[in-house]
Image (cartoon, rainbow, N blue to C red; front, top):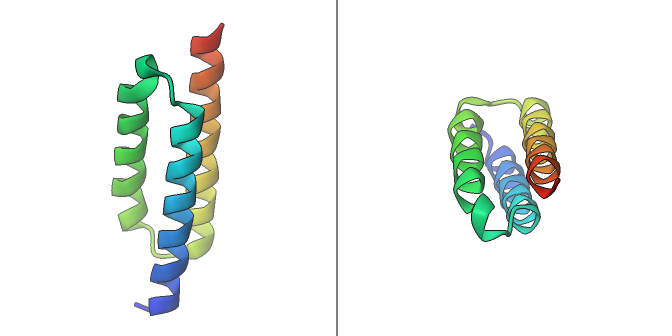
Length: 73
């Protein structure tokens, strides 16, 4: 394991967590946000390639946006 990969993935994880938390800041969406971030953490641990981790992060943000759109209508 390269320490630079761990640092990059940690920064990406923190940024995605903050953005997803901001998007799903509603009290009703807190449980959904927790589930999304827990699955993101579990799947993110298994990913060793930074490119796949970035794709996973983009997918998490898209899911957060879709959940927000679904519950805001």
